[in-house]
Length: 144
Image 1 (tube, rainbow, N blue to C red):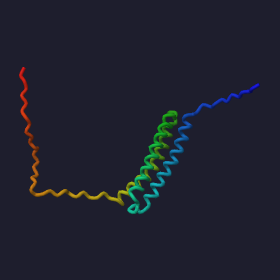
Image 2 (cartoon, rainbow, N blue to C red; image 1 turned 135 degrees about the vertical axis):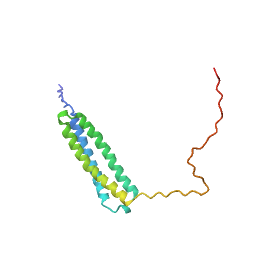
Image 3 (cartoon, rainbow, N blue to C red; image 1 turned 90 degrees about the vertical axis):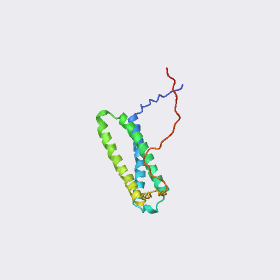
Image 4 (cartoon, helix red, strand yellow; image 1 turned 60 degrees about the vertical axis):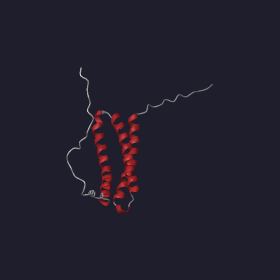
């Protein structure tokens, strides 16, 4: 005689799963922000553009993932707890954003854009401000 055991599966709490995903995404985002902060303290004139772009791209990629999961958490959160949830998320985002902003500002200071030189024109070209005239063929429309 076979005895079968019935396993009762617990329903999956979508909010719990989303919060776990958000925690993981936050860890990765924090690591990317810390890498950006470390790089911003270095002599950026010696850092390659490739390295800078890799660090910033990684940060924004992790931020996008975190924001996606955060939106799911907010969607599943009860309305009574939503304000506290949003405040906590905003504080976290501000803290990591400050690190990438510091890097981007430091990069701009270390690599200022090259000044744009005015284009010299030959002196025999006239600088007329009038609109150019165009000679179009005359159209004869039939009269009804």
